[in-house]
Image (cartoon, rainbow, N blue to C red):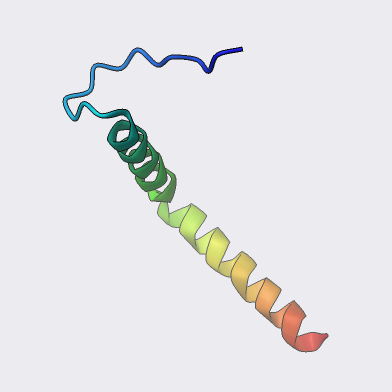
Length: 55
C-alpha cells in the first residue's frame, strides 16, 4: 500500500521541507492556547510538582 499523497500547492517545493513546515505550523497552532488553558496547565503542573515532592 503506497502512502497517501497530499495535494498541497506549496511554494516551498521539496517534500521534506513541506512536511517540516507543516509540522512547524501544526506545532505553533498547538501552542496557541487561551489564557484559561494556560492557567489550567500551570495549575496541573503545580499539582504534579506537589505530588512529586510529597512522595
